[in-house]
Length: 78
Image (tube, rainbow, N blue to C red; front, side, top):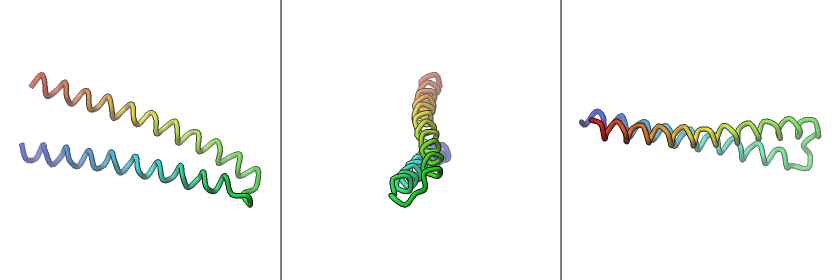
């Protein structure tokens, strides 16, 4: 059981790390996008990239929710 608990802790740590890195990238791109010296063509590209990253972040939330549900279901069946 110890190995399973350690693996679960590692997976949770990875999930949190992925989310934090993605959110950090979104914030960084937003700051660059909002800077007055950012050229318009770059600003438009950043706007699109920010949208994609926000979408990915939302999909990750859903995926992690389903994975947690699946883990609970597996525990219940076991």
